[in-house]
Structure formats: structure tokens, C-alpha cells
Image (cartoon, rainbow, N blue to C red; front, side, top):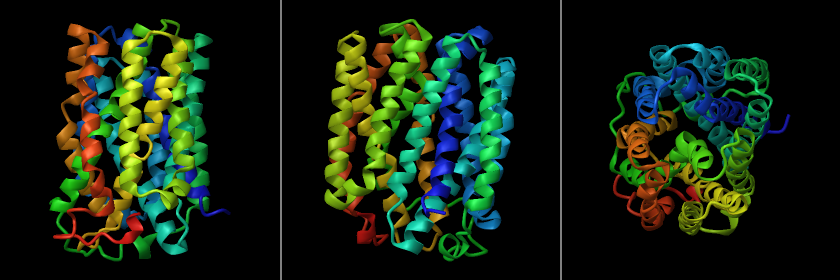
Length: 390
């Protein structure tokens, strides 16, 4: 079994679950009869679920092992998916909290598996693993576009996705190697539940913040932007959104090769420019072909952001395990971004969806200027980031 197969399948399933839900949000919103501001408040449930999960995510992965955590998380999520499409607003919030809680466990597990394979084999698989997240986004978006075009209700679509992911979870359990010696070796039994972020973690989070906000906005509100500015047809809107996932997928699948050629700071700065250009195009033109190009540029631009941050954090020499450092980074990012979905939803409700994206366009400058952190700049005082981050 190729060493890439286990993390590739996990990332793929995770993204299929994620994008299948978010591409059907307009239909779910209509069935709940709520406006964008109210939906944005519901999306805060995701932040709450993550807050509840992050303090224990690293320890759960070290206790169960990343392999078991990933498989069990996928199985649980497969049952939650159809519930999100049929429950009333209060039930949606509760289910979304639980959905985010389990996905946080899964996010930590999949990155531990990818980096564990890199450390044990010496073969870079992290960017390609994240590339299969993008493949899942693409195929999930196309499936959602087809389902919407055929008039299939969200509950039927999400139930079918759940069955598919449950079967894949059984495969994950069978083919994924144990990572215990690599990922848990530095974790001690008396490690505190809440991992205090170090200066290095805070700098990486600042580097990650700008493009992460824009990527999240595309997931949460991208379909609304397309359907209000470009086309009202749900099937065509889904196809346009697919260009975002294509751009991300192509970039991530070639990411390990690009990381061998270019320095991380160059890749991150090019990413910031690509995102800024894409947003500029889609906010100024309402042509479908230009929108497709713009979304592809944004997808290319956000592709390296999280993989480079993960690689930098995993490479830190710290008293905490890699899982605990990842959880600390996620906690910092959560606190920094917790109010963004409802804020953008409120702005969209008051001033239009395009205004929400205009407001976040300057965040590309943050990624551009913080890019040297991806090479360990400024981290030496408290964590020693090795060349493997490159």
C-alpha cells in the first residue's frame, strides 16, 4: 500500500463531508427560513465545538492513536450529516457544534498521520495529503452541483455522502499505520489539558491568519457570492465554485515538488498576491468566465497557507507533542477568528455580500509581510525550527 494512501483517503473524506454541507447551505438556510445574519450566528456553533475539542484533541489522539481517532471520527460524522439538513434552527446549531467538535479531532489526527509518515519515511507527503483535501472539495462540489441540478433535497444528498464516508472509514482503519512512536513520544502523562501557546505558535498564527480568514469566507459565503453576483442557477454556481477547488487541488498536489524548488516565504508571498488578484477580479466583474478564473486564483493562493503552517509547527522542538502544538495553534486561530462568520453575515445582510469580501481583501498584506515566519524567522528564541520546515 503506497504510503500516501492513508492520509490521502482521510483528507479526501474530511473535505467531502465539509464541502457537501457548505455547498448545500443556501438550501438548508431556505428550509430553516432564516437570513444570512442568523445563519452566521449559527455558524458560531462551529467555533464552540472547536473550543470544546481543542483542549483534549491532542490527548485523545495520543490515547486512541491517530489511526483510530481518524476512523472513528469519520464514522460519527457520517451519521451527523443528514441530521443537519432536517433539524430546525436550534437543532442545526446543536448538531453543528457536535460536527465541529468531531472534525477538530479528525483535523489533528490527519495531520499527525501525514507528518508521522514524513518523519518515518523521509518522503514529503504533507502537501500531497492536503492536495487530496482539494480533490475531495472538487468532487464534493461537483456532486453537490449535480444533486442540486437534479432537484435532490439536501437531506438525501447528505445521507448518501454519509454512507460513502462510513465505508471509507472502515478502509482507513485497515490501511493506516500506527504513529504512536513518532507523534506521542514527546507527550508526557502530566501535560496540562490547556496548552499555553508559545511566542512561536503566536507568530505562526499571525502568518496564517490573513489567508485563513479569506479561505473560510469562501467556504462559508462563497456560494452566496456566486449566486447573488454571477448566476442564480444552483448547478452553474456549483460548477463555478469547483474552479476554486481545482485551483487549490492542482497547487497542493504539486506542492511537495514546489517546496523542493522554492523557499516557503516565496511560496507564501506568491499565494497572497494570487488571492488578492482573484478577489479583485470577482469583485469587479460579473462575467462567469472571469469568475471561474478568479476563483481558481483564490484556490491556488490559499493552498499553501495551512500546509506551511503545519510543517512549521511540527518542526518546532518543544516539550509538547506535535499534536499538542497543533491543538495550541488551532486554539489561537479559533480565538482570533471566532466572530468572523457572523460578522461577515451581518455585513452581507446590511450592505451586500460583495462588501463582506471587500472588507477582508487587505488581509492578504498580512500573509505577504509575515511570510518569513514560515522559514523560522523570529522563532529561534523559544522554539528551534529546523530546515525540515522548508
